[in-house]
Image (cartoon, rainbow, N blue to C red):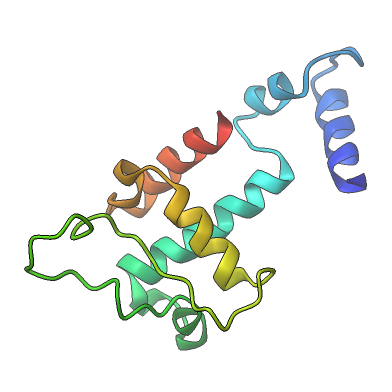
Length: 130
């Protein structure tokens, strides 16, 4: 909470805005997100790399999001192309493995299937800014 307040003050001062300016305007002017949403974006970027570009991450990070059920298959099922990840039941609710996979599964399907890393970031940032 204190970090959020400090960042809001800094944005307000940098833009010479009055105290009662809505915070969303401050972030929109700099094309950024609040701290919590930036943290969520970074977690989603990790999951995206783990799903679509495993070679770019260390093995220990890939193991967090390791998912044997995710691999595409040739059977005609409802979830064939949804990119849904399943959480490991032995993980804490506070762990990055649990939270990041939960956020990934709550992203719209059209964002989860984006292969391009840069396009994924743009779409996810726009989605989180809503």
